[in-house]
Image 1 (cartoon, rainbow, N blue to C red):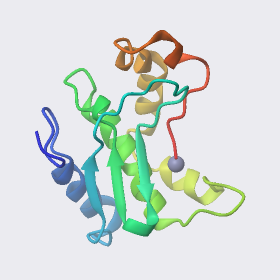
Image 2 (tube, rainbow, N blue to C red):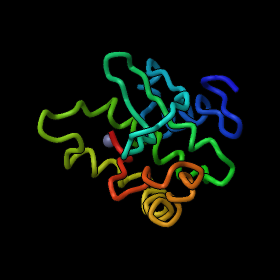
Image 3 (cartoon, helix red, strand yellow):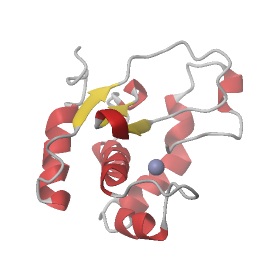
Image 4 (cartoon, helix red, strand yellow):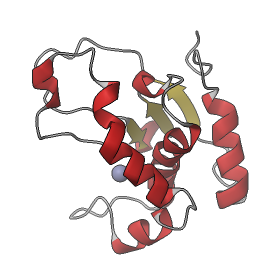
Length: 140
Ligand SMILES: [Zn+2]
C-alpha cells in the first residue's frame, strides 16, 4: 500500500482521468497522495481531502480507500480538491460562487452529495463516537 496506490483505488490514475476530462490536462504538475492515517483523538472534524497550494499537493483521506466507498464519491472529493488548484482561495471565501458553479458541472455531483448525506457515517463507524458530532468538515 503506497502513498499513491491504495488498497482499493489508484489515486493517480483517477486524478489523471479527471485531469484529462475536466481540465485539459492542465493540472499535471499537481501531486496526489493518500493521507496517512493519524490518530484522531480530540479531533471533532474530519477532512476527506485537502489541497496544499504551496506544495501543489492533493491529499485524500484513506477512509475513502474502501470498497464500500463508490468510485463516484471518491471522484467527487478529488475533483473538488482539483478545483482548489484552479481557483485560488479568496481571503474571505474558500468556495466562491464560481467554484461552486464548476463543482456542480461534474455529472456525479448530485449523486455524490446524496451518497455523502446517507453514508458518510459509515466511514467513521470504527472511530470514536465523539468524532462524529455535528461538526464534520469535508472540505478544506
Ligand atoms: Zn473545498
